[in-house]
Length: 439
Image: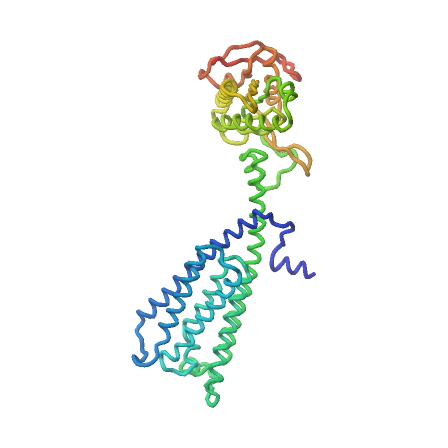
């Protein structure tokens, strides 16, 4: 029952612990918030000073003038806090002390009004400066930690209670307490109910803001965790796929997909098994990392998206996940770029890697396959199978780029193609014309 009530009031608690890097990111934001709070405080004290300087004063010219002194003390305190927030993280005890000091200085400023204007103490209870109490409480919400809001509200409530008790006790023979609302408004008399209302208002605002910040904090933590997960996910799949998954209006289910006219490029390293036998696991990983890094650069250059890795094989799509009207030509450009890279350099400890490319265009299905607990976001369909088969057929023709007739037709006259023949792709009855590109 209490758990349900807690969830209803404060929102659902984050079930898992935030990773250290996430907590550090949030701490950094909190430090930036302290800078903002300090600047807002400086703006407030400057505003106090300007209003005091510009407002016509009815105070006697002779005698004590405490308001300028209090404002000066508060200005110095605010400047020290501002400098401290910019030099590094302020310790928690100093932040807590700062919250209390803010309210103490504000209450002293309000208290000093009756001395400044030579009036009975009840005079300061009607000072409009009391409204700034709520600004100081709300200011603590910028840090996104409810404890500072609660501390600020408690300090304000206790401070105002002390001011009220001071009025009552300072003139025991004539406490100036009234029950008449008109008398209260038109004289220096005090109405206990009005002062209780002020304290209750401070408490209510503090509670509401604290609850709001707790709820927002839980939503923030969940959002930061999900954002971090999305960023981590983009390191295992392409950024486009990660964005598609995380921005979906509804959770992706097995079989969810859409039909797109796109181009698919399969790549495979020739003789990879023979090469890998001669390398240690560490050397093999280093070689593949260099190879995939070089391949990803040229793939990204022409708008391709690496949809899947499988050993040394890559499945690259154009216009399947990110929009690309010139997808067929860009796939050909990518294949040519890959050949230029593998011819011009070596990988790992001097390994020369020849890469076969199979390219085909047409209607494919883009979506998720698998189970509800384990999904793979990929492309599938007859035209994907043709591209995979064309990559394998390179070996029979002794070449490294083969493209289907749909791709050639979509490219127009930009490239010079040579027909290599017609083949029957496994699983299809109709023959498919295949081409290589002349460079």
